[in-house]
Image 1 (tube, protein in one colour):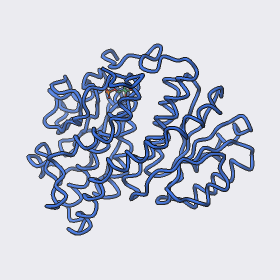
Image 2 (cartoon, rainbow, N blue to C red):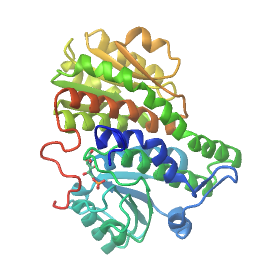
Image 3 (cartoon, rainbow, N blue to C red):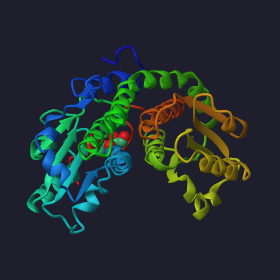
Image 4 (cartoon, helix red, strand yellow):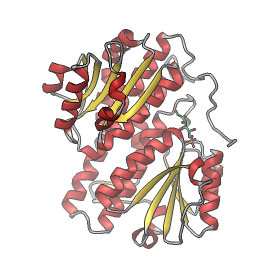
Length: 366
Ligand code: F6R
């Protein structure tokens, strides 16, 4: 059942090229320059006339929502808010009939997300679901939706759900960007072709496994770890930190790299590993100077870089390469080594990777 892997989590990490492919199969028609998603197609006017999109979710799905915020605003120029479902439902939010709520949930059973949907519906918003489990409560409660088609996710730590949620949300953003006239047909075509090539790039990113395992050996006894990223990769930093804390029980925090100097830099000493996402496209020079600031305070740097990077290699203690891609698609690649890092560290610490203490796969109580 684990397909020859020691754990479901590792199997699911390695399934990502296929899972992402299954997510866009039949929807992304790169040759024809078209994205077909019936849940969007049938409601296109609603999306094009929306005042804003509110994304609600919890945990890893909330991180996918944060990535989507960058994509929707950057490419489709639609205002987006991303909310923890638990906060949103209890703070008497302003919701109108011109708002669209997108609920993101792997299980489709998360109690807070479900309650947020019900509230938004009562206030007249249109509710769209991005779920993995077919026929789940959230899938049934929403007006329309798009499944991720990632296949069953058994490991409690969410991996392929995250990348496939980002894939669905990216397709929606691209489609809306095109419909709104933000893209020329040729630029659109270029993006679709690039998205189509992501599974092969994820496959390549997975080849970092042995190197990441060696890095895990060095830091497995750490008590703290920081994750930094900017732009599209800030949510990836949050997700990397969540993965590490939930399965290895090491305290980890994700930060936007530029926030370091507003507090967390005080934590840096030679005992502190800092994972920095420093891909070429997206604030590269600024991230490099953030890395230098950490290095000059003796922090240990594990950098996720674009293939062939030379600059960061000279400063960082370890570099892990991922294939080049446009900035909007980097989260699908930079996430991979972070998933592997948490997996190996947890394993070396003797933790139950698939069933971490105190956690359940779906949180059906608030
Ligand atoms: C993290 C994790 C949780 C879930 C969260 C939402 O690895 O698994 O943070 O992401 O409980 O669950 P869903 O997506 O099922 O609503």
